[in-house]
Image (tube, rainbow, N blue to C red; front, top):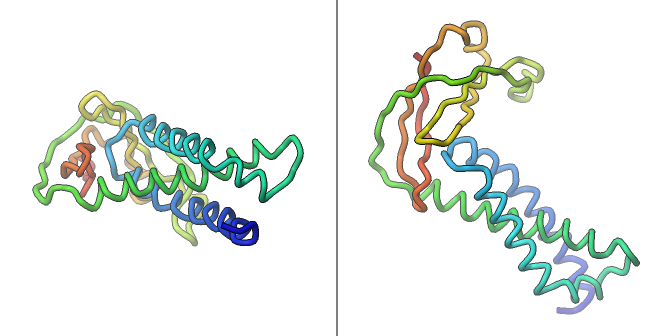
Length: 174
């Protein structure tokens, strides 16, 4: 690949990685998975890409001492998040069709500020449950905030994902 093509390739991969980061977060919210697994995928693929391609990156961009830092950021965000997004996407979209319903006790309650485009700043309740030994935070819409202390359990409809990580299909407060 020529230097001119690499100058287009690296920023393109970087922005595709940022774009895929958004979708990965959306899928992560609906997947029962320890956060270390996606983090390790990002780190491992970023380091592998760094080891394979750093020489080309260095020949494309010359930034004295900061070149290694720029390369690591580019490889982690670009290649790492793309690989992790593919993993999360495959687990989510190629899951079993058979679902199961189970009820879980709420362990903790808190809230975050956020919402849709025009509702920024509204409190959204966050309930933590113990799902088969994994603490999972479930974010609900603003309408549940007023009565968040009255809810005792969360009923989940789940499916088994392609790689064995459960997918949340539906969640209901009781």
